[in-house]
Amino acid sequence: MSEAVEATAPKRKRSDRLEAMVLGTLSVLTVWGLWEFIGRQNGSALSAVAPPPTVFLQGVSENSFKIGLGSQAVPVWRAVISSVTRVMGGMAIAFFAAVVTGVIMGISRRATMLVSPLLHLLAPIAPIAWIPIAIVVLGINNLTALFIVFMGVYFTLTIATLAEIDRLPPQYQIIARNLGASPWQCWAFVVFPAVLPGVFTLLRTNFIAAWMAVLVAEMIGLRDGLGTIIMMGRNLFNSQLIMFGMLVIGLCGFVIDAILKIIGKHVFWWRV
Amino acid sequence: MTEATETPGRRPLIEASYVTMSYADRNGHAATALRDIQLRIYPGEFICLLGPSGCGKTTLLKLFGGFLAPTSGGILFKDHELAGSTPQIGMIFQEPNLFSWLTVEQNVSFGPRMAGRPKADIRAEIEQVLRTVGLTEARNYYPHQLSGGMRQRAAIARALATQPSALLLDEPFSALDVVLRRRMQQFIREIWEQKRTTMIMVTHSIEEALLCAQRIIVLGGRPSGVLQDIDVRAHALKDRYSPEFAAAQRRLEELIDSEKSDPLRAPDATDTIVGQPLAAGGI
Image 1 (tube, each protein chain N blue to C red):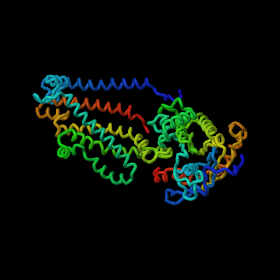
Image 2: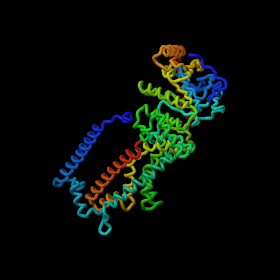
Image 3: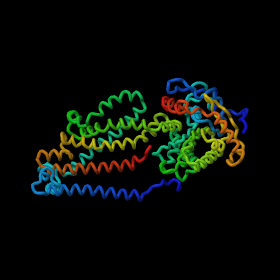
Image 4: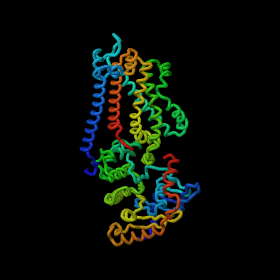
């Protein structure tokens, strides 16, 4: 079976990854160090507006990482879970809805003609613009958050699905039909799986937009989540809380993106 | 080399009668790629279609497979008008086009699964087909883990799994290197000897045609027609170093060379035809 083994250079890959990690950590540490150095100078404006991590982390830890006042204070992990569930839930729904819409549009030319102007009209509307309407119609709850994430991702992904379908080599469908697949089977068992990885890659690129939409929704309307931390810090003139909120938002985004990357690599690994 | 002779009493598997294929060229003028093709293909034959590029070999193959409908004339398959692609006539392209998210085994079982055949049935069939193409060990591999030759073998296995009466091969080995190509020629020949599935292969290599085929059909002319229909069953022609082989190769070369199409001629007939009507037909 030696024929089957593709020539790879795992050693080279591993050293590349190590180098990336070392350099990446180095750059983060350098920025952090500079920030601490400047922020800890006496009378530095920076320490008032953007206190360095050691300062704000200590400040927040005095409150045992609880956000809010008195009995209403909730631990920070509750905010993390709210925001992360919202963005992941909204993206999952949008992903499958978009692929299904795309495939249906791919099957029926009439459906494409009917739906595609709507898609292109709705796609450019920023998800944030839906917040006022969503709050009125759906109320201040998780449904609003899911809706906003959905609106932020769905249209772009549907358009992406259509592009992926267009990109498929026509032979795939010819072969599937030749092997006896009905038109329906052809779409369900060939076109649908064939476009999944490409659309998922776009989902990952669109994650930042969805993440921001959730945070803004939390800042404007919702009563919990990471966005609220920032708004609370603003209302209390507590720059430590603001910086802490920003750090957690950044970390969460980083981790989610890494998770999406892993999903892309291990679940939707194939290329057409 | 002798002219292929009709065997009386045998029913042709595929029959082309007065098949003409026209297409609209870039300027919208009707151009004829194939004119009045008359051919009978008998069960169990191994046929190679040869001819200069642009002579409509691939177009004819697609007509035989029901992927294109002739402008006039008809294609009969088992005495019935061929109405579109059918699993009974399998198609192999130059690219294996394996479904990359499925293992070799899942790829091969695709056709039987679509037909809704019972699971035990499918398993037995797949077992046998995988053994035939020598991919039993690689059954759980994904296409990207296979070499080029193995991929093409898997594609052939996938087509064989639907138990087709005929297999159409459109330059199936031209993307492979010379050594591999030789091996694949031998491989397809062995498959044919074992299964006696009717094979129709388009190739631009005279050597490949002589090595594999029982019968070579040379296309050429403007518009293209059948120039020669040659019986190449002679045993000496399967030995590439025999003088007979060299002589036959030279004769075919000269025949095709004399027909070489004008390189300045505007659109390539096959290129134009391959995509368009298929896409419009929504296959």
